[in-house]
Length: 377
Ligand SMILES: Nc1ncnc2c1ncn2[C@@H]1O[C@H](COP(=O)(O)OP(=O)(O)O)[C@@H](O)[C@H]1O
Ligand SMILES: CC(=O)OP(=O)(O)O
Ligand SMILES: [Mg+2]
Image (cartoon, rainbow, N blue to C red):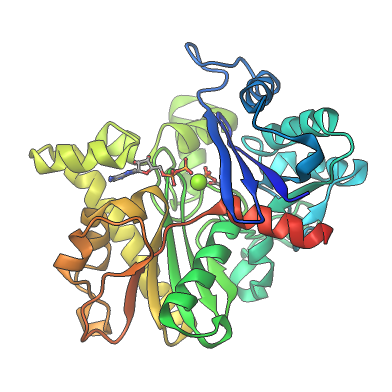
């Protein structure tokens, strides 16, 4: 019994991995994409899950399956760690749907399908929000009326916690230090993107807020903006709150500024002289740099700045753009180290820099599998 199936469902995709935890080997890896879109391979997440199960046919040995680990995006302030799933936990995840309408319904559909497919296997939820439950009140509090905070759950929760947790631990290893000894700023730059201030292995601030919309510029999400903009757009155009929310989540960010949500397209176009793409790239890097400044102030002292996820791991241009001009703070990169292609965790700062700048590939799936196994013992 040493296999774990990890299901990581986004709003329009299901990523899965079957892992043999005895030797930490991937037995199967796959993705069902563009769920619900025309031309996509599955009309909804339930159908997507049937595709996953049929793809796993042959690889999956039910008698060896110790657990199914689920990524669940929103755990509110109720879930502080990995949690064995039962009817009550499902009900709680359902209650949190208003806080994560694009993510939690998909997570629940997968949980239900997996409970049905593997009724005798423990199912474990690993929440994006859990790692950020250590945020102190001044960091998670929005300055809004008590009724919003007390009755409606309005506060900063933070996301990508599983990635920030895994990456910050790996970064400490690379530094040759114990996690309790180091302060760092982790930049998870994927399709969604967030920054996290980590003090002694614990999250003390993060850029995503009540929902995954706040903070950095992302593929299709605006990140930070003046909260008055929604009402202004409503007054000027008659568009309702739902439509504006969808626009800010799905049609903003790099896509709105530079014409593509894929950073590879943006960098290529910017290098060819496309001014919109140049602005998208510069605004993206500038926003991330501002968060480095803010979290440096929050942490007081940092040992490392760490880049991870699709953009952070692969784009030397973005990494260089983000830390540009921070030499006076002891944060700099070596152009040669930054340009080197590698899939390994590595230093990209020059030998003389006071602060390490690292690239650490994230692995949310192995972290979910480890946490699931640790929980069920
Ligand atoms: N070589 C690269 N240069 C720039 N961006 C890249 C590169 N490779 C991948 N990416 C970016 O990584 C993003 C996906 O990151 P990932 O962490 O896999 O996202 P998610 O888990 O949210 O789907 C893509 O949108 C793409 O823009
Ligand atoms: C929570 C979140 O933003 O996740 P993703 O980056 O996978 O969209
Ligand atoms: Mg991701």
